[in-house]
Length: 85
Image (cartoon, rainbow, N blue to C red; front, top):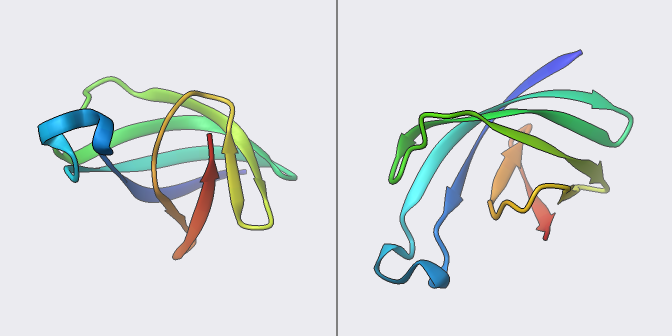
């Protein structure tokens, strides 16, 4: 079953003068137990990327671990989840 979510990412200190800038995105994910994979698309905000990004990872006890090397804050089902990198 495909699930749809929205979220945001905020640029960290490593981005210098762009620190704190935010981009909104939507996720279309297929989940199987705790594993998920799908596509992320930027919707609006700073530095929108027109190309979709493939995402893979797992969700266990409200903790998201991404297989990809992506830094982001994400809210799924209206709850903020901890991200492992």
